[in-house]
Length: 259
Length: 352
Image 1 (spheres, helix red, strand yellow):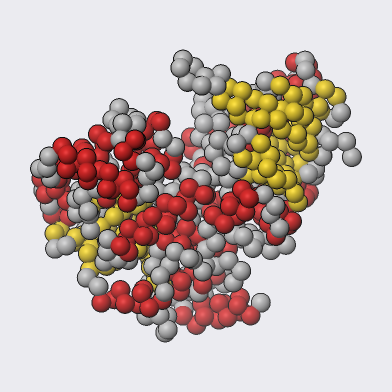
Image 2 (cartoon, helix red, strand yellow; image 1 turned 120 degrees about the horizontal axis):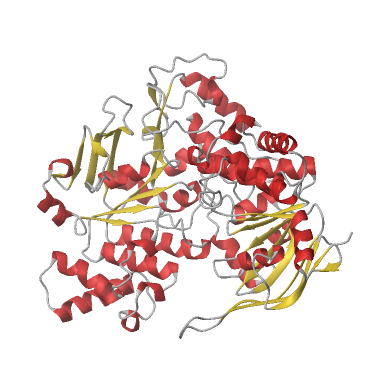
């Protein structure tokens, strides 16, 4: 199968301001994802996992390297727009990612309106459908983000992505700020969206327990490089790179594990 | 089983150790809603020398407010209603401002969640440490420097003498948290409160900080209160654990006992919804249905009644939950209704 997105030789350098030095965030990344695949990206802060995920949708532009979408090289604004029709990005902090002055329905429907898809009534019914998919009520479309909890806001962010019918969603630490019971609700929702709608996922996280639960394939990043990439089972049972082994050793196992 | 933990004999012998902190029937109320259900309701626990007590709960459960109350640091809008907090014979709730200032940072210290926000960005590491040392002791500059280097070494800070002139922004998150811990330990406190100290850190850094807190607790014989929402972290660091739900203690006991034999439906829900290294999609996470009641709206009696998956048949009378004790570990107890029902559920789960 043709990869949905393919990144080749990605290098990202952030220019230092004043006397601070330039930062090499990514030092040559090759990464591709097929339609419907669930891939996890793990690594510590500063490893470049967020930068890579942002480059994949063009929120950040690579200093060097290429992005292919459906086999076509992406360079022009039109080509990026086409890519963004297929790939939606969900941010970590649900308190920052929703506009406080827009109702939930306006936020979710914004993408449809920009693309000019359907009449206002059709847009509204799509918004309500998306809200139902993430376990919220259609009437919630008329409320403002302020009345929702963190977990509910993250559901709204998911609905905003889903309403555009994406082939893939890139989730950057989307459950990190949530309580375990809410985290479990969101994770199960993602599993359900993948299994029943075939939505692919790139799931960025520093929590190996979450990644292991959700992902089919995992790439481990360290200092701007991919140090290991394998299917989940092999990576956990037989880690090859020293850094992967170190990460695995540091996961708090808890007493309930395996009991 | 955790490698940080001491042999079982060590934990059991704690019973003979001196009680450092004693919290009895602590309630925290909202200023403007005196009649609402208290945000923290009847919290009671002791902390002994050399032991670490974990407080677990979701956001809104009152765990952070409880830890702030121990230093009388509650924010505007809430106040301590009833109950007492006794630290080494001093009642914190009755102390005046001057006494509190003497207690804070010398008898009881605190480590906060975000080391970036807890450190003054305009002070160097050396200044930050000398500030806390000078606040409680009248000693010379060279003694302060000596003490600062000593404490930085104790918390595993690499090359401390070169870093005294560093500002917080020049340090990584893990090193910042080590500075915050050094500040907390600089005056040799007897009680250390750690409120989610590793939540903002990477797993590899987290492990080092947990080992450090554990080691200082044992070596300095301090009493540690460790607040967290992560049961995996609690399992690594705490001897005993208190599970808070909507301001009420619903289960407590030795960490091993509570996490391997959870009895309260809420504790079981927390464990079933947290992914661990053996979770797979074949055995999906089971989230707790519903959401935490909003502040001051917790139901009377059993606070968990609206979300409890085990009372779907409506057989219990949630107005008067009672405490049940584990026959083997007497410190392990939980607040519920029917002992028999809980027992039978746990047996059916373990037989699967």
